[in-house]
Amino acid sequence: MKGLNILSVCGSGTVTSSMIAQKVKEILRENGYQAKTVETNPNGVDSELSSGKWDIIVHTSPLKRKYDIPSINAVGLLTGMDEEGFIEELLTTAAKLG
Amino acid sequence: MTEIFTDQLIKKNLIKINQHYESQEEFFKQISSWLQENNYVTDTFLGAITERERQFPTGLHTPYFDVAIPHTDPKHIEKPFIAVVRPDSSIDFKEMGNLEGNTSVRLIFVIGFKHSENQLIILQKLMSMFSDQNMMNICLNSNEELVIYNALMEYFD
Image 1 (cartoon, chains in turn yellow, green):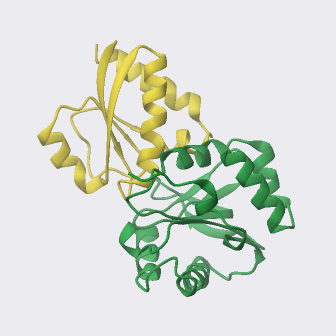
Image 2 (image 1 turned 60 degrees about the horizontal axis):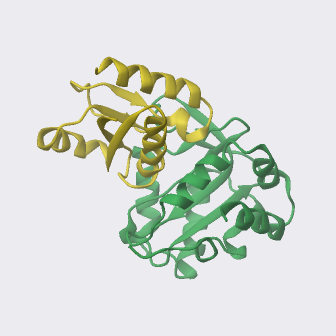
């Protein structure tokens, strides 16, 4: 299984980011990835990125800026409105990371 | 982390339907006041939840109708809860993750968690409920709190 480190970001760093993180882990596991997830709020992203190695950011609130790693809006996953779109983007991004 | 069970979080008196709120502001004032009187939150809750909603809106478009999941930091919470509120007319909330977007919310889940709960499973269930036509229909259309309560308890188990 390929490993991936996912940073899950929401306004409080607790509620919606944990809702998302678990779902993202499951989706990735079903597709052959072993994902590790950590939740944070938008202000915590910089310090997480500088203190660890992250592959993808998934977020339900706007990020403070563009980062060097890919970021994917996860609101559609949260509400079920665009789960397929999110899954497609997640898997395409993961595959590109090689 | 201590486990928390659904029947500790959702109670019949935490389900409020068909009340009128002129605005989001009035909704937050009224619900905060009730929550405080019933020892669910501290007196700093109203300010915190209003500010948090302003910075990080929680309005969501689900496949059926718009909902909101306002919440704030654990330090404003005395006892954990999920309040389910269905106003008699929709309330405007800004959309989560989208600075320009608006939602017309028909159903609000006010989420009050403290750090020590294992809330993940409940949150995930809530998330999947947004795509469940039957549950969303009950929450939107039932005229009895008890019916909604029983449906939620069954769904969350």
